[in-house]
Image (cartoon, rainbow, N blue to C red):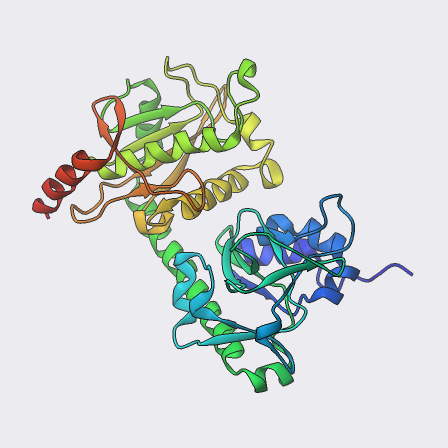
Length: 369
């Protein structure tokens, strides 16, 4: 008899996309072994998936630590965890978490909410292997207006919570933090959509030359030039991200996505074919998720707004970017654990600042505050 899906993935995606906070916990080794395919299919929702053997075998990698082993599992000290910086507030007042049969997660678009300690080892097929210092077992993924959390370990059973009350406090903190993020996003969206430019004004931008307050990119997900089909998606997205950063650090302005430098309108149909439901909402979700993962500060803190212009060549996206306060600097990372870079707009150029140039620019900017 086929297994009955108690909570359909489509319902979960709709709930989260609309602003809900979904936490799926107690996904321990036994659960993963029996539910591996549904978890794989939900990897876009959670931004992560159980780490399998290299050949795709059902066997999963899980975490062990002889020195930290207790009656009900392994105790992970929070101060020793590698956690995404934006999720650190969830550990306020939390000393350690206790988990049993904790599974290693392979990170995709999500952020790390909990990980093993420096002494944690990865076990698969009854043999330990070395996977480096970062061993995530809980992740948070921004999906639409809400967030999906995957906790790959037995953490919420009464026996475990009784032995480690911090488990319950941590989950409660996560819910509160993510709910605040969603409310902030809704607040920014409402404020900036009310103050946004009229559709006619936005369409007029398509006929304007690039300037210190206007930049354009051909695409966000797929190379606009078919001859450059091997261009990594990370490089395409980075070009969009650094333009947003440069405009935010200078005078603010607009970034057009879906138009070439020679003003030829390309549209975003190829990009839309790669996003959820192939529509504008799916594109916006991917763009916001990218900004939240690689830009500092986040999308809603920057006050970014995405507008759409319909043209005969297809939909064009226009990001409205407010000028940031003089005492704030916007930066971008090319990889999740890479170094922050600062870009500014100089006429029609986007330049990177580093070393003494960055220091002088930052000092002059602060004096304007």
